[in-house]
Image (cartoon, rainbow, N blue to C red; front, side, top):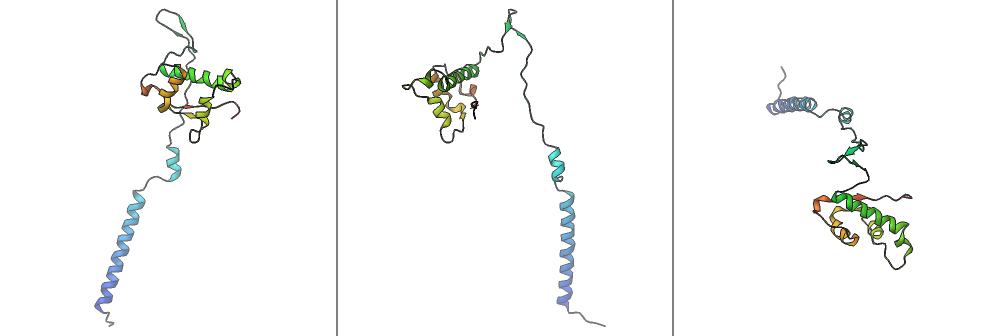
Length: 148
């Protein structure tokens, strides 16, 4: 009969115990993991696409409301910004050497990346001579000119 020292027997038992624990851990990991990447990709939300409501709208007195009528605070601000950009690119300001194209300069500034941030709406409203409302009424505007 072969005699195995007690220390070696304990070492073998410890290794066996570690292997059993590792096996149980692997089984636990594989049964409780997130789904594979392909399944996760299928669960993504679809892109949201907004469509303009082209239905004719009628006000309280029965008059047809034009889609060009923008009476909200942000709508008035947007109309004023568009008019100023048009003026600075092809209008009066573009031909007047004495007037600075401040809005285009603001949009071209480093870090602006052609965004007119809602946070600067108060100063822009003041320059555009538009009444400023609540700060939460204004959102960021991404400006894209035709040749960009």
